[in-house]
Length: 143
Image (cartoon, rainbow, N blue to C red):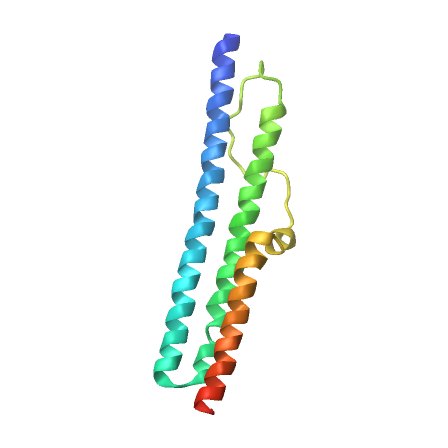
């Protein structure tokens, strides 16, 4: 039989495990945004080097892909946050299960994550910038 202090310590460790997962998912989102900027900039630079505006339009492909991937990581992060809240609200005298499984985590719609301010406010202006670059390249090179 576990003492109440030991049970509370175990529950705290369980919450720390969940918090580390939330932190890791948030870190992935930052990395994805960084990679997106790098790839989009490289494609745009390549297009301007070749003087081919159509190639600049290809920068929208990785941008959309990174946005969708980032939204998925945000969705998973939100699910782990919700699981954290559920575990936090359980009675502290019950021993934790240490189960880390998204099947037991509350559902979060993918579209809600995709429409999040952290996705829309980053990838939206970037997409507008790519479109402006494509239009500018077409005007500059006339192709």
